[in-house]
Image (cartoon, rainbow, N blue to C red; front, top):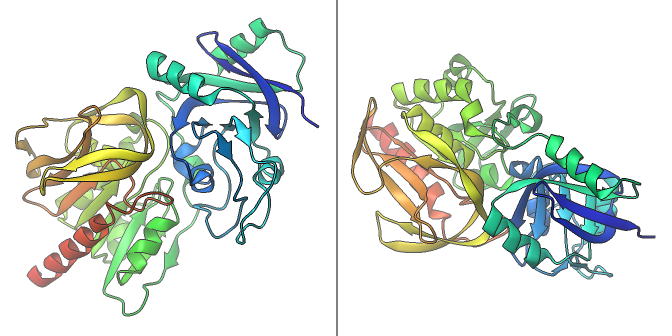
Length: 373
């Protein structure tokens, strides 16, 4: 049985729909995802922690839910917004319906709202706080007040919520070639899997692992993962990355890891108006001239010189990738030490595989460093 539900934005705009998933109330940052597939990977991506995701594709849930496609052990979104949830599940891999998973994990959702109107509103006004209210006797004024009292994403320190509490190892597939220390800021399961397929033994470590503990593994490379929150809150991890750069251990960061590498190099980050999300974002690789269609989920970006070689205490570097939609920096690489990063998700689960070559670049970097030592 469905009840009335309301999606309430902190600028006072309200959309009325029906409850879907768990009932109650939830708060987070309102963001939109433009993919026509991959809702399960979105829901279980720790980068979406504290975000209420609006799906622009109108028909969601037809393939159900299965354990194999999870990017983590649970759903992380704060809330889920769809227009027309599928009344049936029809896929041979499905183990349960999407709504039953939302209910089972206590994820409050709303259906029957115009998700493209919400998306246009966020595109014009920018990302903002939002609440979903269902089965509650609250006035419209009270709902808006509660939304405005909820925490904002700027200044949010969310990594402790999503990082692994203890180290674990993903063994290499076939012959082991390298050992990588992966610092978990909200890592997706696809990332260590893709590294393992390239002969890498991946040691996934808590976000607050000390530099000494990382070096004790004698890693051939260090990886810094995606994750949620404001990169300005990550001072301790920034210092860890600086120690890795000083040791000249091959380094690769994605998404949140990219922003933290930028901070370690002395650059600043800023909040985007509505962020980049979805699986259809065009990015130019300036080193090859190739245009990639890529998967994104980030609301912050790096401020650095785009068109010129920049100089840091670790030597020279350059912006390697830029967004073709708005010119935002999507990748950097150092020219004198083995370190690079990208803002988007090369593991792209689910999504395009255009950027999977970046894992090969990391492997080649580790191979080169191994030969030179």
